[in-house]
Picture 1 (cartoon, rainbow, N blue to C red):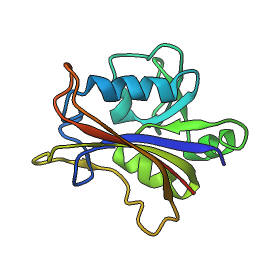
Picture 2: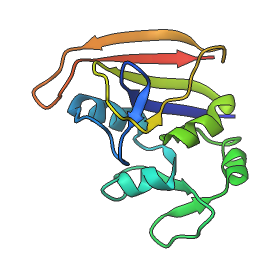
Picture 3: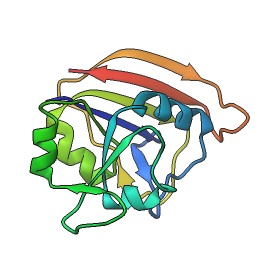
Picture 4: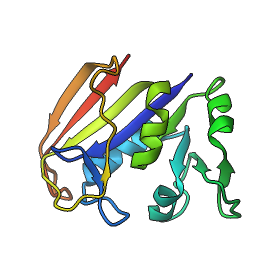
Length: 156
């Protein structure tokens, strides 16, 4: 399987609140773009709905039981099959991360230096999953960031 996850979370693992990212981090969005460019991104319906539309230079697949005309829709089984032949980027949300965790070989994790109150979506727990960190970089908040952050790269 060729699955890679990418997510940003707060210090407690929160990734979302009220259907959106609970912070504005331009540096993390640039990091996301660099990692996902020219790749196929797999997401749940809520994540698709939170995007401003199709992101340029990437294939979008939504996991859904309901057909849509605005984006490609596949079943979990179809995505697993596709993951046999090409690298797929799992981009959220919480339920989708959990679904693909056992099939994932690599994780790009950004830790945002904040604690979100009343978060409703969380990153998967990597504890006991066999991942080890191969890179970590601290980044001070830039002019269009609300918080400092740490970029981590994990593999198993």
